[in-house]
Amino acid sequence: MAAIAYPTNPAFISVRWGGAWNTQVFTSPITESIQTLGLTGDRWMGQWTFPPLKSDALIAEWESFFMEMEGRAGRFLGRIPFRSKTRGPASGSPAVLGAGQSGSTVITDGWTANISGILLKGDYVKLPNGAEGEVKLLLADANSDGSGASTLSIKPSIRTAPTDGGAITVANVTVEMMQASDEITWDIDKFGKYRFTLAGIEAFA
Image (cartoon, rainbow, N blue to C red; front, side):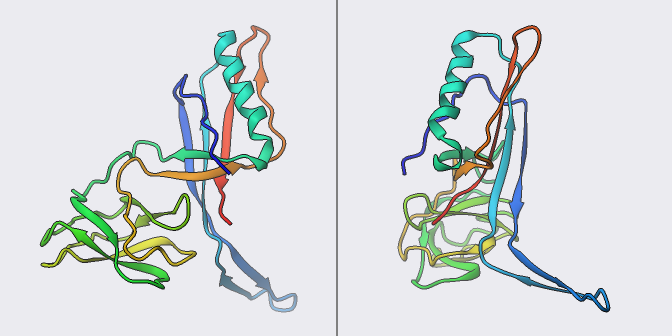
């Protein structure tokens, strides 16, 4: 499904960004001891809040967007706030090195050789996997070796093995999302000002 572009005007006034983990929890009814098991299906989530709107034209844009989304059926591309580029130089032409990779590390190559901190802790990258790929956050600084290879420590863990040789996105990373609920409403005050909030969770097959 093609992503639907949400209006760029006005700019958001705040964003709540983070992740949701899929954890199975068992609590003993006798001892109250707890056992947990991490499962696959970790995903990003975000909520964008926009300033009050009075312009009929802008209000119509947002109303139309929400109606076109049809609740959780539609998709949009969520941008990570203030992270349009990495802190590390991320130079070169990075790509996945090797098929069948899984877990919380990914072997890559194509970076500029012998760079300490080619990517830094907290940088976002997108691994090639299907139409939209998988967005990951660096858990530790990464260095490139003499051949331009680097092993990245990442979360969330890889869901599906990234494409061997596929290009890694390091700038303007977006997450394919669906709305968090099928029930979408907006507030209208007594002065006719509209307040819209867009809440999304990562969508993947």
